[in-house]
Picture 1 (cartoon, rainbow over the protein chains, first blue to last red):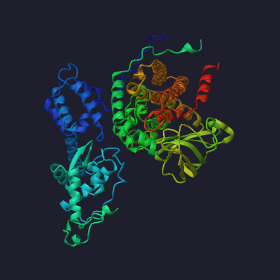
Picture 2 (picture 1 turned 135 degrees about the horizontal axis):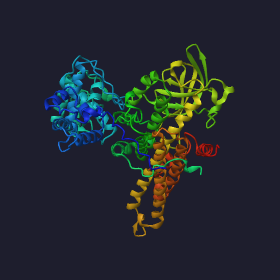
Picture 3 (picture 1 turned 90 degrees about the vertical axis):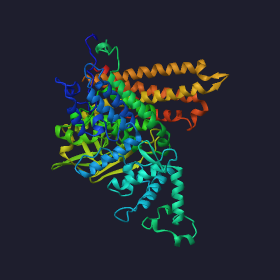
Picture 4 (picture 1 turned 45 degrees about the vertical axis):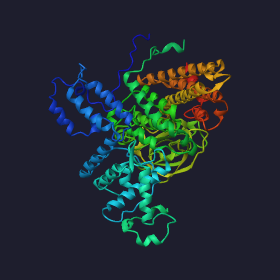
Length: 246
Length: 389
């Protein structure tokens, strides 16, 4: 009665490459062909995950593909593909390197505007952050650092343990369209330990907060400061709206 | 024998893919959803960030074939995902299961090619969220008595009326609405339409303040001369009741899985607590009264899970699974209620306060006995299926 029932065939995995490709077709593909193919794909496409995928998903996807392409696998092993996905994994598994890579991807997207954006870009939390009006075409570098720190401070004050913003959110809030406009400031702030990199986001550090407080008290933007210093203040923040007053 | 007419999956082993899905989703849910669950419950906040994460995990179209943008996986995998979500955050599991089994699946099953190509890919990508509207202020279980009217005018149906208890209420983008075309026809007059959010005359009532699943957005939706193009009719006019019943069959598997998840999640919390809490010189997991509670609960939860998988397997085999789904939903939801009450008892006084999650699980469990057919309706469905000859 129940003997001839077979469990359903194993379902295809999400975004699995067609079986032919996965099984390493009849003719063993020369290594450089695979490398050539890999060049056109982003690291996310190589690991077959969404651009916003959680680190857990990326880890499992790599594990799955690594088991498939590992040279020890007599059926589907492929040393070249294994090397390619392992390189991709090395970048995407490291939060800081992934963040940096995301920025280069954003540059590439900007240069070809018709390119499909990653679906479901996260929207949460943005409404709760202060809005900035851009006052000139490019930010003065010092102003930009302060603006970045202020945005990150607002996020961190909401959630002291984990509050931060992704690079994309920062660019949206500060209305910066080109990632190159902000990349340098983020590099500087990180080198100076004023920001740290958390799970897919940048967060202000205590050092950064102290620097911000120092800068703002110089320029008299902090609430309750005395008025005499105001006249001597440099014009660093001339273009910046008084966001802290809000 | 009435009951021995179907083959049972006697050895139910998860496939490697199913285990992979389970591990992945369990880990994400523990890392990301569990820490937020209490805050979501307290603030009645819709967890949009959880939705974004599910979208990025590519599970929003899990049982939908790949040609329409889904993952093309089976319904056991779907039940597994819902269970893992419910273990950590019932609100997230409700949002997810309403989208998948109450909106995307019926569009896939009943929609024509053009509708599937239009609606499913954005739903599978998580860009559009689905909702299902059947109950009305005056009609719940008796859906044939619907009074929300759809009148054909040229190439549009004009909708008038209200629908109640819409899960994903104001957050959704596509609403699968069951409306009445001719009240004298009762269930033969029902029609299923996909209504898009920005349609004229489509408004929302206040958000309901609920006992559990508080983060889930539940509200009334109202139509005032809302035009819906005839291209948005699922199936033929008059097939609305069929669409609704088919939708609910699948939906019940989702609710059963959710109930299993809530029960197992509460069990896990209670066990962690029992291992630490001391009384009479030892931790309470050594007390027989407590041990018996754990044994009873786990027995029932495992049985409920098997019923759920059984219904999912029947669905994957393409059989009629109305009764299997009703069995699973009826039993799992009652198990969830019994188990979570016991878990509160194990926590004692701490179970009664919101510092510990036990009471939240108990409140979340109750809804599984109510929506998508109350336990009484499930008994009716089972009886009708068993005793029709």
